[in-house]
Image (cartoon, rainbow over all chains, first blue to last red; front, side, top):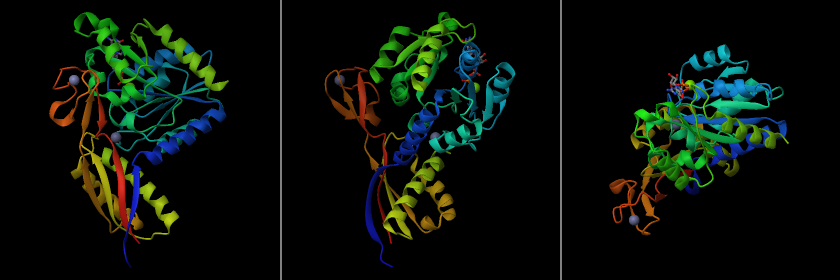
Length: 222
Length: 114
Ligand SMILES: Nc1nc2c(ncn2[C@@H]2O[C@H](COP(=O)(O)OP(=O)(O)O)[C@@H](O)[C@H]2O)c(=O)[nH]1
Ligand SMILES: [Mg+2]
Ligand SMILES: [Zn+2]
Ligand SMILES: [Zn+2]
């Protein structure tokens, strides 16, 4: 049989992008808002989410999907500290989630009694940004000890995120973290990104973040 | 395991293409890999050779990779320069107001098939 050359010229992300768009439309029609939360390991995703869920659980029915690599520690923390329905997504050691794995998680969680689904993505700033999960909105958590130059080092994640939570502001006095610089650098990558300085440990600054999320969820479901 | 995740997506794309074009066997797959895409060609080859055995369409295929150079643009002085050599700071004017023009992408360029 004769082999022939066939031009493809397609990004390797194109098939996932299309799949993610289908999932987003499905969630829209089912009235479920999906929040994708990304950060480096230890930036405070779990701590921030526990507090956020407890603040909003009277207003929305919340479900959470945990995707931490090979551990169910976060899933346990969630079910011990919140009333949200929690499931674990097993990534099989993979460093990112794609739309297909997210859909499996959503199916397990069920959308009928969930207004707000939250995905705690794998702790990594590189490939979760490349793989669209089908989320309604993407947020990133950057903690003060990581430094204010992260937007220069990891431009893509700042580009794809709608909101940036700057966590652990309680330790600002011990680090040379420059809030003005991080704001400037983040806006260089994404002029529309909303920035919320917070302390997930005490709850400081989190009301503005709740308000943003509340508004986005209501708008998605309207 | 990043590379294996990517190969799953390449395989899905090619399976769909093979369906459309009535192809039964792929002999080679050529990728264009950006210099700063984060993809490691050696890992890619290993993952490919592992994964292809599970997919009849790809079982005898060879993976080829071509490098796409990374180029950064400086908004301050409108200079373009080699990303890998100079990084995020413009070598002409020292500004951090720069962005990547090309080099982060990864494309399936072409395949050989019948
Ligand atoms: N000082 C301080 N520590 C925090 C804050 N938020 C989280 N932490 C701590 O940071 C560590 C990692 O938090 P975790 O929520 O597990 O991060 P994750 O890996 O992103 O889910 C834990 O020891 C938290 O107690 C904060 O606002 N201030
Ligand atoms: Mg966590
Ligand atoms: Zn990955
Ligand atoms: Zn310059």
